[in-house]
Image 1 (cartoon, rainbow, N blue to C red):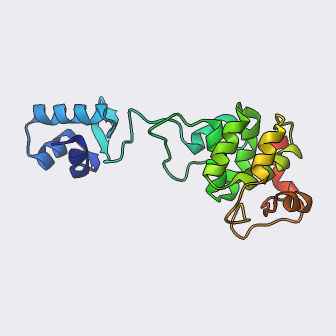
Image 2 (image 1 turned 135 degrees about the vertical axis):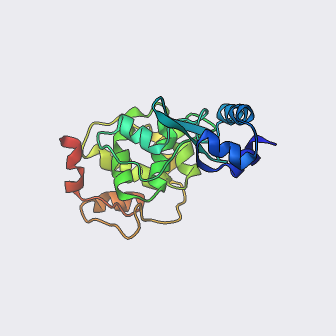
Length: 208
């Protein structure tokens, strides 16, 4: 039986005994199957010692080959830390700040967008930022947020080529956060033709 088929059959929290029962196999076979699933990235373990060992199994790879997700990157680099409302990991590649920032903006969440301002100082490749901003259809939004970030903190200088690339990009919606708009950044809204959701008071977190 292929690993993914076994993972689908065992999806959820299991003990070794439950695995035996679900697969109708002996203990030694169940241990062997769990080992294979763990190597393939379908198993996350917890407990052990005096507590029963639990196996969290999913047909979507959840362990072994996972990399940092959006919230990991935000909490590592931004001054504003966030609670992770959902499990987000990248499985097939290492998530770079240049991709995490536009990915966060594309989520359309107010706090995530606000926290993403702190990532601009950790951009190593502006061309990569432009590439991923276009990929997630948030290029002008990212450009506008960069200018917002400059009003509250020192940020690395964006080169003109990247700025022009962001500004000339098409966009599906002007709202960074749905229905959210401020009057504090009217001039920047006109430059980028997007609606900035923050008030100046929202940015004081970066001065604390």
